[in-house]
Image (cartoon, rainbow, N blue to C red):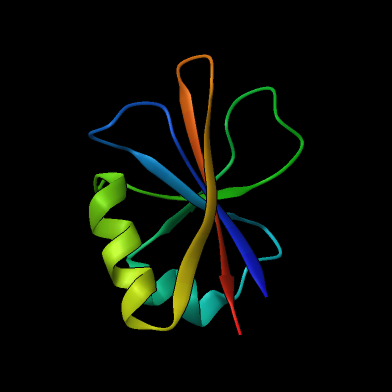
Length: 81
């Protein structure tokens, strides 16, 4: 199952999911659900740096498939068999 993580900076916060994300995985990551003003959707985020989030995801079987930068945002796509 694919998963994407977004970070606006290399130090965090890191966006780790949307309103349809697995609640148990979001809990494992210590993520908080929020709705930003003007958005019509919810997102999960953590204050951890991306490397901490990626290490946690690796420990439960996720592997980085690709990574790119979009403006000031870094995006990692992961996959779990």
